[in-house]
Amino acid sequence: MNRIVMWSFVRGLTNNSRRFGSVAGLGGGGGGGGSLRVTLTAMASPGTRYQSVANEGFHWRRMMSSSMAVAEEQGMKNVENQGKEKEKEKEKEKEKEKEKENALVSSYWGIYRPRITREDGSEWPWNCFMPWDTYSANLSIDLGKHHEPKCFLDKFAYRVVKLLRIPTDLFFQRRYGCRAVMLETVAAVPGMVAGMLLHLKSLRKFQHSGGWIKALLEEAENERMHLMTMIELVQPKWYERLLVITVQGVFFNAFFVLYLTSPKLAHRIVGYLEEEAIHSYTEYLKDINEGKIENVPAPAIAIDYWRLPKDARLKDVITVIRADEGHHRDVNHFASDIHFQGKELRESAAPLGYH
Image (cartoon, rainbow, N blue to C red; front, side):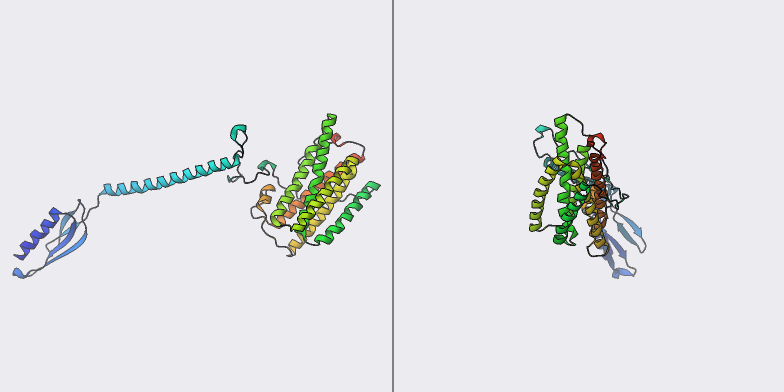
């Protein structure tokens, strides 16, 4: 009797709700003393069915619908696609914001900064120079060249430069970082002054310059980039900044007058100044090699301007700057020699792109 009641109860649960699965085992034994064991195994779905098993029982098995699994996978894919679309929209918004920042003035004038990238596809970060202005320094230049003073003007120029070195050595001693900052603020002046005066002369006389205006302005720009690099490495104190302003003001006016008076003397002085610059940077490298100055990572501006490796160090930067000074030495001694021969610069082709 007990078996019949329990069997009806279990059948009613599975037929009406179809939510539970169980294993019903009818234990062996005689008469009305039989027992019933029911075990809930899983949540049943509309696809639940039963199979008969040993020991006169039934095993209810949950069968997952394949359509439900497919729906879940599609839902996950939709969520991923939505996430990717949102990321793309954010990137587009960032690009638009950058374009707005670059357009400093209303687009009415049609002037804007185009999108420029490096070779690896990353955005070009500099406005002061572009990829086509960069170069790899020629390190094979002979740094030991020296123009032997022969005539009075040569000897005068040589002595003037040696006298100017005395206060510099006393003030900076072996602080070559600060010394380089001062040196570059002075070294960037002659090319600008000479290029400006040749430009005005070309306009007055309706003559070509033979490329010398561009060559001298390139020299001034290159020296300025030396300064921009050194500023990333050294922060001058307030009195050093004041000294820079004073020296630049005096040197600019003195060189302006000198170039109007005697271009050959002016270029010879600059040639000897560049020789001293080579000596200073050689001592700088010596202190780096001896560990007196830390060989820190190269500034990003130097890596892009001279096309240095990404892992370049201070030693690499000083090496390429010294090579640049060697080229400036050659250009100015060459220009002075042209004047000493009684010719004008425009009569000889300028060494454009000489790095």
